[in-house]
Image 1 (tube, helix red, strand yellow):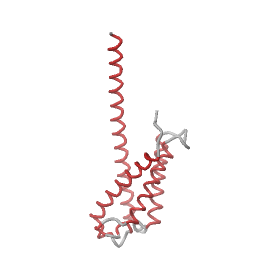
Image 2 (cartoon, one colour):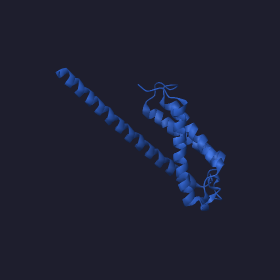
Image 3 (tube, helix red, strand yellow):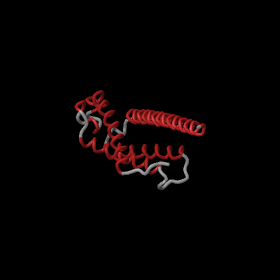
Image 4 (cartoon, helix red, strand yellow):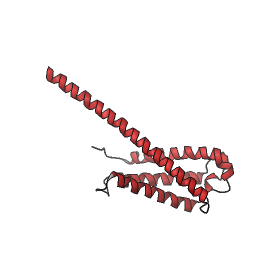
Length: 162
């Protein structure tokens, strides 16, 4: 049985996504910031860091992504959809929102195929890493549950032998 989620669970997820995103963006700033300064609003400070406006944009998109996760992976609105279909809809929705943010906030030049290629490559890598992390977490949780079940059965057997 899944426990009831609170606003604190939601905020925790938002800030986790935001933190990871900002950490990756900082690395990009160090590596490419000075050369991308004139091309992207994300790199207006060059290798010196991330602007407050960009940080706010990433915080907003983090909140939207977590909201979509709640929408697609709880039974609040969508009740009879497979996990695969939910995942596909979630990925397409996140992709769509991200593209809207790219266009609105001028994150990179939209008339250059190279920037779009890099975006889709990065998005794909992030999706694959995220999927791997969720899979590893689920396997670890399943191992814990199996071990707890094994201990419970052993205790029951020991009790019945008394």
